[in-house]
Image 1 (cartoon, rainbow, N blue to C red):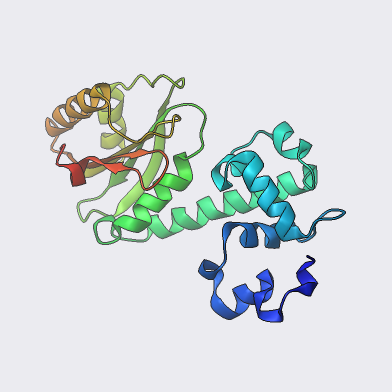
Image 2 (cartoon, helix red, strand yellow; image 1 turned 90 degrees about the vertical axis):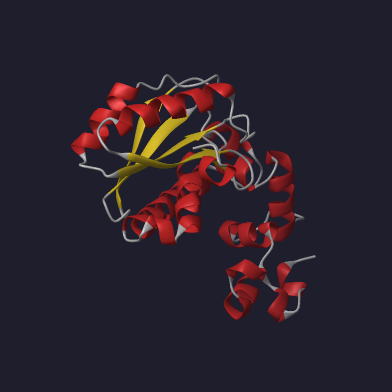
Length: 224
């Protein structure tokens, strides 16, 4: 079925304008991005095929340039367009977080960390540095590792926190496997960092692990 065969208010673009973007399914949102289908398939049909092929939006958005461009209906222009959309989303969330009190907007902070770290193929350890009113000063990715883990050095974390004159920090790292459960190594390094920062009166407010789903908060689990 062609999109033009649908009722006017069921066409993705018209539906978005009338009901809002959150009323659309993943294939409908992707269809708006694609704009056109291919021979024998509407943009919605193509979107469904692509989501099935890549295992959902995360798989599609984190695909390599070659894998993305080799898929039917995509190509270099669409890849460049997608990277621009993703980067604008990151910058939008960055502005949101940097202009809010993180403790009164935990969802915005979590969404920001998910956007920064989800889908990265290697492990990344990052920090949100906060002032004495718990407003975000900056976000920094401090360590990168392989899929098996990152080497995190407490001395360097303390040095960066002091450089920003931070009063508190929130740690975040991703699990490329998608499983957001904290490992014993995660628990140990968090305690080491907390102890090191306590020596210079800097509080650790949370450690968020980004995987599939909503991720894991050490604070919510009572692990801090």
